[in-house]
Length: 508
Image (cartoon, rainbow, N blue to C red; front, side, top):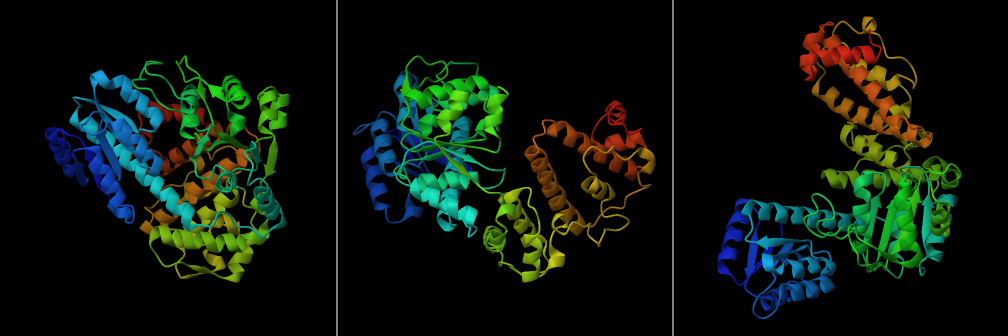
């Protein structure tokens, strides 16, 4: 790993941080002023491994301030996390460093474990960014020979010199973020940041702060000023995924930004100008959401300037072979193994599958095959059960996982198996069976959730939770021959809890 660079004219500060970081196996390199740092960065320009992973700098030093250093670093190394150290009397100027792109500030005198934890966080962020950049550089942007995908590619080309707002529609897993990244990469803003946020994945109470940032003291726990995603995307592109799930009151704030390009941080009184291109995406029918009052009509028209519809994978079956080979190569590289080949017969079988989870599901299947296929050449018999539409013919002793098999085949809306029908006992499965079952049930759960979400159901959590709990309890009871107390102990729940759950789930 690249070293943590520490910049401070105080030798004692440098010494304390060096020792603390070395105990955490984090290499360091120290400097006494900004001139030394800039010279070292210049020398490391041709060898990226010699540069810093994170830079920690004091704010006041002879020969140049930490804020000046921050400005110069962000101009040449925008992805490098910079932590500014400051005395309490300098907090106002330190907070202003956020607008210059500082990762965080560290007030002096600081608590050493907190300082190490903060630096560790910056390291993790830096490494995530590096991995993302490597993947983007190594992998082709998008693959597709199908006419529907060629239409998408042509649209990206036509929009390449435009800053117009784009709305991408398509089913979950069809690759909407890839299209957004391609639009950014081929736009005039390509040198700026690409910032993505899934509005459905963030709790409503936190989403406003996540988008627009907050001022210090804006709410309980807001100990520092924080830049939101709009500010982080300054000069670049902000991708708002699953925009159809955005809370109604926040839609009003988003409309204001799109209308006049200004917003306020939570708890703030000064307007902030946003120089950001917005690309939105959704798997929902926004026109229908407008009709039922779940989405603002004026915001819909603001977003729907240019609409790109991304086809589902079942509509572009001719792309399955190329995508499969690409994902097998990608999986092998990630796992550090030799890439597996796939037979024409197996590819033909894959092409007949509907892929309710779209390209993301095909990618997961290729990960599964890289791990589970026994030979270097993948045959039809090696494909996962959901593709073959049959249960595997090689169960583990007694039943590889009877409850798992029943749960996988149980259609939606059916009643759970009663206790009387549970098997008398289940033998411990082999290690291979456990590994296969783990991959299969998690993949199956994802597919089932995607199918239910695509169908527009709004009880997905409750429906799948009931089925999960039912199978878990039935399996535990089968392993204890129906003894509830022992089953509860094995599951790590109380006796009253298992009794209540049996009644609630109709397992009596």
